Length: 252
Image (cartoon, rainbow, N blue to C red; front, side, top):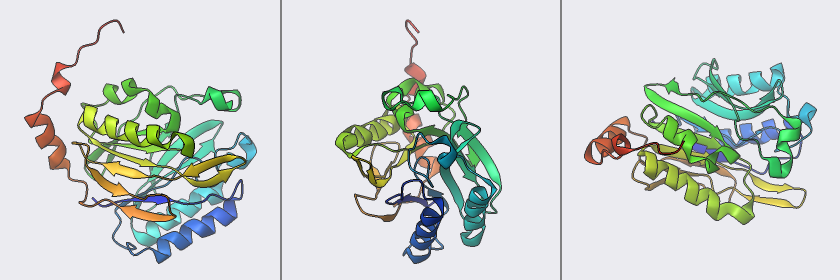
């Protein structure tokens, strides 16, 4: 499965402008027509805003992603708010919703917990034979979420609005989640500014051994996994190094 990581400079709370940018980046990408799964960043159409009305998805927003998926015959994971929950939503190649996850760890340092409702359920969903566990931004700092589903998951997907000044944390933690759980890990962040906060992108993908297979750097565009995601690599890695079976829960 070829995984595309789309990062771009989000126009603050301007959904229609952002839809045009996303459509343009997909249409002009050298990878057009070859991507099996496209992933976008947290609160894809609005940016990480505490203006709940601006972030809330409507029918037209949902239709945009469903139509984009159907047009290019690719699965799409994107972010947005529904009913006060900060969500990661996935649609299949025909635009049908197949998964939704509500962010469990809200970013209190940025007052997210004052405006949104935390999720309470972890999710693992099937994507064309791959078992995927979604997470959103601040969730990445809590490894037990990933440990909880390690035996079930072939890959993790993390969408984020992660500031540039902590980009090293972002990249390090993505790789750590891949290595410690022997699974693929894909992370997509945004570019540009939200007020004085700058974002550098650094959307990346790692294989179960921690090898970089996708790196979008700090520029707008779509980075595609090379080589493609291979479920057998997860099985072979875990068979050769059966570390997950040796985990122990002590004191929690």
